[in-house]
Length: 339
Ligand SMILES: [Cu+2]
Image (tube, rainbow, N blue to C red; front, side, top):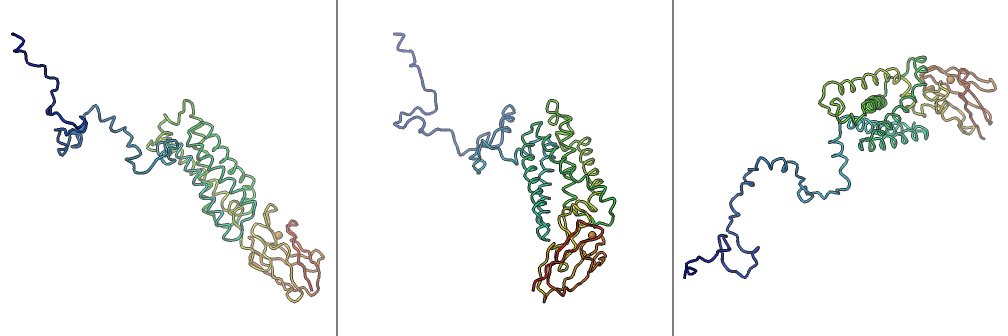
């Protein structure tokens, strides 16, 4: 019969058709794994390369367990448009400067609650601003603009005061730096807001990348120069006078730095001094950069103190003695002499 010559249909065309009790997927394949595959040799087909480049290595490849819900701040910062990075780093920089200023003030025992509280508050405000800006929302730039502007404008009323009182000591570098950083934040936030149509900070080259030559450099330059100019006017006195004071312990009573300004936090320091009759010799030292007087309210003494000058007086009776500074009536002090 013709049928006898028909070859049986061969279903399995694989290389080894050996019956085995092992499941198919456990059977030894004759693909030789000890030979490098084309991919292991580094050959990646052209059409596949993009996909490989974009492939996420995954948590097991990075070695560090990652939380997919919270992409790291660092990654967010690196991938952000330049203006976002600039405002973020400006705010963080200002916070760092404030922390250094706090330490500096504490180290010379000149940290009063008002200054400390204000610096702490602005640290918090700017940290919040930095996080908000990373979210790349338009209003976040408004927030950083306003909070930076508030602090910068707070110095405004003192400008005239500084110009009227030359001779303040040199700039206080951390205040300088904080001020320049805040002006930089203001300039960059303003640019982001002005060009915010269709999230312009992502598309305008001068806002989106630090590599652009035009606008970013101009923005940085404007920020630093403007900051430098304003600080040049201010830092000679105002900022350093607000943020620094001389130590209190130059004499038994020290005329505090900045006493000529009625808004200063201290004048005669300590304002009230208690002594016994045996130790009733008091030395006043003028720690300010202007002249002052130690004038008894009862007129029994009136002594002028030049810058750095000192005067010693011995009380011979117990009692409470009030005194003041003649040119600066807000400067008042008391000596209490006990038996
Ligand atoms: Cu005075």
